[in-house]
Length: 60
Image 1 (tube, rainbow, N blue to C red):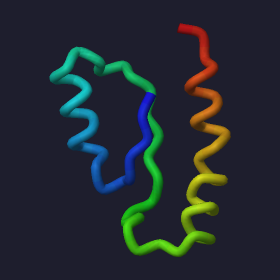
Image 2 (image 1 turned 30 degrees about the horizontal axis):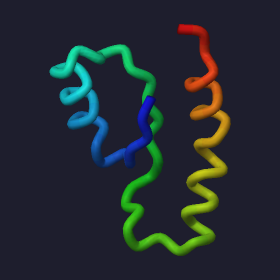
Image 3 (image 1 turned 90 degrees about the horizontal axis):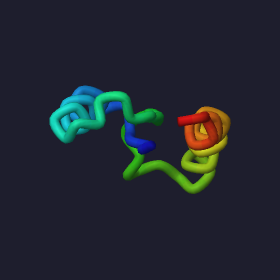
Image 4 (image 1 turned 180 degrees about the horizontal axis):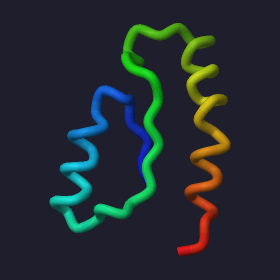
């Protein structure tokens, strides 16, 4: 399971596929993140939390 910003969707899918993990769970957040305020980053995390939790607790 990994989290990345939306800018890297294609790269993340290509990389996980090339490594043999094409079905790996992934969550993408808005982009960019490097210049976000603390409050904006907290909002991104809050928005992604349920999806991340669902994917890391899903049966294998």
